[in-house]
Length: 347
Image (cartoon, rainbow, N blue to C red; front, side):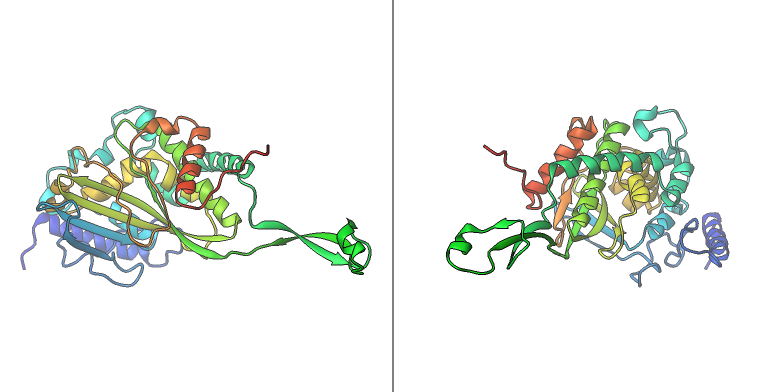
């Protein structure tokens, strides 16, 4: 089998990655994963961390379109794909990569974070975003009573908070009432999909506010004894073609890592730098079908099976002008999907 220059570069890249990966621990810089036969296609389905489970098929939008669906069990697996070199079928298009463009788009596009810095923040976290998430969490706590805590009355012979007159008059010796708060453990596992895409006129602060409110909702549900499995979703369509990506952001039995989720869900650079880079690395058949190197397609709601809570808004960025309006939007979505009931004002 003859190798051209692009094949040689790809093989060298993978050898260096394998050498660097030896001795690396959790949290080290992720390295590009092995592909299939050096052709740039995603590796065949394998256990978590050793490939990218994926499938292809006809598009749900009809016509002659196709659908490509990829799922990553870890953020590290996703970053492996993000950092791959361009496929040889896209040779000569390096200068057209929006993910690597260093022109000053202004803070409204990527909040001033370019590709290399975005790669670092995936591992290091984003302290500024964490502060905003905590602010959103405090707002939600004030709006939603902790429904997992309810008052329960106990009756005793003596020493209660007050006397139950009805029980006393009926001759019941246990007529003293004692209050006790008992937590009701729901422990219900739910799957939440947070879509982080947005149209081109989404401003950075709108991405950030929306993401903070989404993460605050996860934190709140966890405090109410739900166990949330979080999927970070990115999908685009162009013509009749659809490309869907999901990243497992948190397993149900894992804690909420706010500092890292703040960047991956709330920062525009994760979408406009890292996801763009990921799409750019596919063979030309896929990149052309999804308008990579150009508009990167359009975005639309497409809820997948097995999702309990679906948070998505790629349009109407004005809904996220402030953290207050973002929290209100998220609570409305939770209400529509049966996970939040607004408090009724007492008459």
